[in-house]
Each structure stands twice: as structure tokens, then as C-alpha cells.
Length: 335
Ligand SMILES: CCCCCCCCCCCCCCCCC(=O)SCCNC(=O)CCNC(=O)[C@H](O)C(C)(C)COP(=O)(O)OP(=O)(O)OC[C@H]1O[C@@H](n2cnc3c(N)ncnc32)[C@H](O)[C@@H]1OP(=O)(O)O
Ligand SMILES: Nc1ncnc2c1ncn2[C@@H]1O[C@H](COP(=O)(O)OP(=O)(O)OP(=O)(O)O)[C@@H](O)[C@H]1O
Ligand SMILES: O=C(O)CCC(=O)C(=O)O
Ligand SMILES: [Fe+2]
Ligand SMILES: [Mg+2]
Image 1 (cartoon, rainbow, N blue to C red):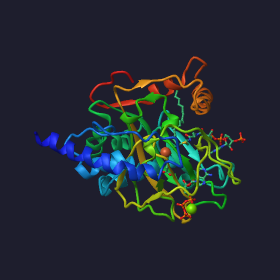
Image 2 (image 1 turned 90 degrees about the vertical axis):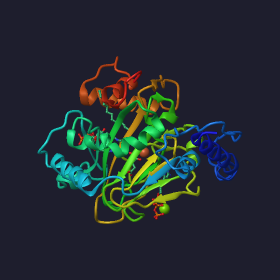
Image 3 (image 1 turned 45 degrees about the vertical axis):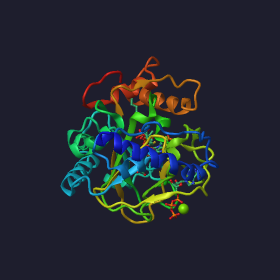
């Protein structure tokens, strides 16, 4: 047997044995069918980039954390560009600068202290460098395959909580926002731009939840308010076992779009920064989400597109993504 085939056999054997344990901890939370006996890898391509342990970890948990993947120098450049955008020294086409809902109506907060998130930075060449970093794409390819689209770009500047707990991001699955498939050929890359820990609201994940299905999402019923489009899984069980991903500057997590994740309150005085990109295979295809649980977010996004960019009724949810997507490797086949 070849080395690659040998390696695959070891991984599959391991997965077949260990799935039962992971499954057992998730039966209560979601509707998963537990009759999966892997004949091949479902979530990863074995391209000799991931170690056996990493393949197993992603197949089982739905995420892998790579330490020290992005250099300080690159991160400082992203931070610098973020500051320039907040000071309005640069104007980026298509970019949304979002303020936290609890300070959105305050006239007294200016500059980066007012900003909770930059959405859609793909037209900013300095920030978009993140999406084409070779060491990131090398990992992305293990999940998407060789044709890679950058579909969704964000820089998150999680603010100190104002006391209303609005700095939380409810537990959700990113696939809720995406009208393209297959889910297994989509991956998020999320890089800490400084130390992130429990106190400043690190990512919180439910390992293995990527093996479930897409859940119904809606605004959580939070007394202090919820940020625009921060939908959460509807029947979230707060007692479900979770993992807090504490990370150093430059550490990067790659995670599956069905992985249930969120982030807690930022209880420090500092802004917690992270930069991210969602990638999809250039061979993915768009779906019509009308009549599905994604209809609510689809309507919100279309509404925003019409208010912000004057898009008319003929612009679909899929169109809003096709406009934003950028090819970063290989061919744009059907996206
Ligand atoms: C053709 C291309 C189309 C592109 C479409 C763009 C789609 C973008 C979103 C896609 C979602 C991506 C997937 C995300 C993954 C998970 C997430 O991160 S979900 C959270 C993402 N959230 C957003 O992307 C929100 C986008 N931002 C906005 O829509 C706007 O910033 C805004 C929140 C509507 C604020 O608009 P703006 O014009 O900047 O603000 P104001 O004029 O000051 O306020 C208008 C109105 O809105 C209230 N408000 C302000 N900020 C917030 C907030 N954070 N949350 C809730 N409400 C907010 C504000 O108080 C005003 O209210 P009023 O009652 O009218 O006074
Ligand atoms: N009702 C809910 N619906 C959806 N998500 C929720 C709900 N309540 C809490 N969450 C989310 O669960 C995650 C963890 O929240 P929490 O504020 O407890 O943070 P934490 O990191 O566990 O902090 P702590 O150390 O205080 O426990 C966050 O993503 C939060 O937004
Ligand atoms: O950085 C965070 O708090 C998580 C953001 C997130 O999950 C998202 O915007 O989809
Ligand atoms: Fe997310
Ligand atoms: Mg908690």
C-alpha cells in the first residue's frame, strides 16, 4: 500500500472508533444521525499539509487551531489599516462599519472606539492581503480543494461591554448566512490580532457540532439588546459542553460553517481584535433559501442591500454574495 493510502487507513480506523464518544456528547443538543461509518474523509483533503492528528481533529471536532500562523508584522499592518479606516483617512467601496448597538445612538464616541466590526473589506488591498497569505491558503485548500473563493471578510473589534452584554455574539452556525453549498467545502479562517482569552471574549465552540444539521436561527431574547444580524441558534442549551479557544496574537483557527460558536462578553477595557475570512470552493453552487430557515436572514440582507446600495427587488440573496466573492486561487467555476 502507498504511504498516503496507509495514512488514510490509520485515520479512518481511528475515526470509526472514536466517533461514538463524540456523538454521545451531542445527541442531546441536536438532530444528528449517528450511523456514519467513514469510508473516506468527509471534511478534509489529505494533501500532506495536515498531520494525521490534525485530520482526525477536524473530522471529529470541526476546527483546528494553528499557533503562530500570521506574523506580528502582518497583524500590525492590519491594525494600522483598521485605524486609518476608523479615522476616515481611507474610504473603502462596499465596506460596512458597524457600531455596537448600545453606543450606536451616542454622539460622544468617535473613531475606533465606536467601531465593533468592519464587514466586507475585500476592496481594501491592505486588509485583503490577509485573505491571500500563502500560509493561510495552504490550510484552506485542505478543506475547500484547489479552487478558492474568498466569500466573506470581517475585522472584528469587540468592544468593552457597556454593561448591557451587547458585546456577546450569540451561538450560531455561519452557514445560516450562506446561500451556497456544499457546506463541507466552506471554511472560516479566524486570526487573533492580540491575545484573546475568556475575559475579553474569546471564541467559544461546541466541538463536533459540525456533524449536525443547520439549525433554526433568530435574534436571542437579550434584555440589553442585540446587534443587527446577530442571530443565534434558536434552542440553544447553555449547559452544553463547550470549549473556550484562548489564542495568542497570530494564532489562527480554521472551522467548519456548521460548527456552533459564539463569543462571550468583553469584560476588559481593551478592544479585542480578530480578522477573518470565509472561503468556499470555486465549485460550490448557490441555492434558493426561500422556504427554509435561512429566509429570515436572506430578507434582512436583501433589505440592507437595497437601503445601502440601492439594489432593487431583482437582486437575490445569492447575488449579494456573488458580488462580494473574490477568487484567490484556481478557477471560479460556479460561484
Ligand atoms: C450588493 C451588495 C450587498 C451587500 C449587502 C451587505 C450585507 C452584509 C451583511 C451580511 C452578513 C454577513 C454574515 C455575518 C456573519 C455573522 C455576523 O457577523 S452577523 C453580524 C453582521 N452584522 C452586520 O453585518 C450588520 C451590518 N451593519 C448594518 O447593517 C449597519 O451598520 C446598521 C447596523 C444597520 C447601522 O446602519 P448605519 O447606517 O451605519 O447606522 P445609523 O444610520 O447610525 O443607524 C440606523 C439605525 O440602526 C440602528 N443601529 C445602529 N447600529 C446598530 C447595531 N449594531 N445593531 C442594531 N441596530 C443598530 C440605529 O440605532 C438606527 O436606529 P433608528 O431606530 O433608525 O434610529
Ligand atoms: N441565549 C443564548 N442564545 C445564544 N447564545 C447564547 C445565549 N446565552 C449565551 N450565549 C452565548 O454563549 C457564549 C458564551 O457566553 P458567556 O457570556 O457565558 O461567555 P463565557 O465565555 O462563557 O464567559 P464566562 O467566563 O463568564 O462564563 C457566547 O457566545 C454567548 O453569546
Ligand atoms: O469574533 C467573534 O466574536 C465571532 C464572530 C463570528 O463568529 C461571526 O461574525 O460570525
Ligand atoms: Fe460566526
Ligand atoms: Mg458564561
